[in-house]
Length: 455
View 1 (cartoon, rainbow, N blue to C red):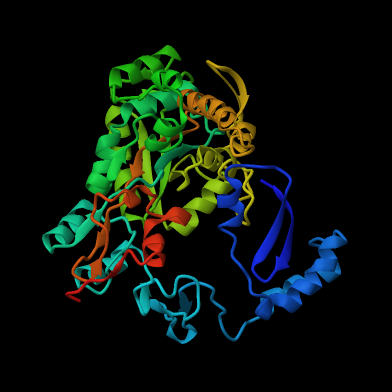
View 2: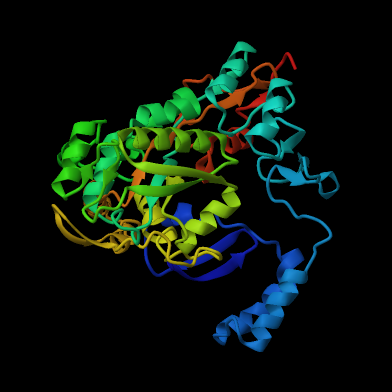
C-alpha cells in the first residue's frame, strides 16, 4: 500500500505522517515497523536525496544513480542504537554476534540482560548448541526426535501459531495442474496430519479450513456462514478418484494415472533441502501422491535456489510458504496472489511465478483476488474488510491456487534453567512466534524474561 505521501519531523520527539489511504493496518505495517535511520549518520545523504525526490528523479537518472552508489558505498564506523541493546561490530563472526546493553536506549532500564549472544545457522547448526545449553531460546524447525531429546533434557517447548507453513505450489502453465479438479484431487489425496507430524510432530498442525490463512485467523475474521461452506478436504481418495475420472482421467493397469490426453501425471517437485521440516514434508507428500497413482519425483535443492526458481516460473511443483505472520489476512493472500504470481514488489521476485489468473469465478461470483486482498487491508471499516475476507476465504477454498499443508506452530526450545520466562500457557505465546509480532522481543523489552536465579 502506498499510503503515506509525506513524513515530517515536527520536533526531536514527534513525527508527522500524511496518510493518503487510511487503514487499520497502517500503524502496524508502515509506521511501527519502519527502521529509523539516525540523522547523525545518514543526515548528509538524506539532504542530498530530498531535492532529487522532489524533482521526481528516479533510477536511470545520472544524479539519482550517483547518489545510490554513494549510499551503497557508505560504511558507517559505528552503530547508533535507539533500543535497549547495541550491536558490537567487533563481535561479528560467521557463527555469532553480540548485543550489549545500550544505556539510555528505549527500555534499557527495563530489559534484564546485560548482553545477548545471537547464534547464526539453520537447524542442523544450532541443535548441538541447544543441547549443550549454549543457546537458551530459538525459533528453528526441530524434527520430532530432536524435540524429544530436548524435553528429555528438561528443556521446555513453546508452541504457538505461526499463521504460515509449507504449501504445495503448482505451475499453472503445466497442464493439467491448471485444472481445479486436479488441485482438489491432490488436496483430497494428501493426509495433512501425516505430512505435519513427520515434519515437526506436535508443531506441524494440519491446516483445517484450507482458506489461505491461519485457522485461528479464520475464527477471528470469517463469518459463520462462510466458515460452514469451507471444504476441509479431509483425506478421501474415493473423492479424488471421482474428480479425476470426471474430467476423463484414467488409472492404468499399472496403478498410474494418465490425463485425458493419455499423458502420465508425472511432475517434479522441488523442495528446499536445507529446511529439514519441509524436506520431510516433501518426501511424505511425494510418497502419498505416488501411492495414489501420480508419478512425482522429489528434487531437493538449496532454499536460495528453489524460491528464485518458483519466482521465475521454472518449476512444475514446489514446496514454498503460505500465509504471513500477521493478524491481517490480506497479507496472507498476497503471498500467492502477488509475491509468487509474477507481481512481486521486491528485487528478485519478478518473473512468471505460478501464473495464476487472479480474476476468478467461484460460487460467490467473480472476484479480482489480488485487488480484494489489497482492499481488505485498507480503510477503517472492519465490517467491510471482513466481507472482503469472506470472499477471499471462499474463493481460495474452491480454487486452491496453492495447497496449504500444515501450519508451523512453534516448537521453540526455552531453557528455563537459564531463563525466567512466563509459563507455557501464558497468552503472550499466542502471538506469532516469528516476524514483527514475535513474543520474545516483547518479553525482553518489557523485562518479562530474565536470567533465572539458578543461572
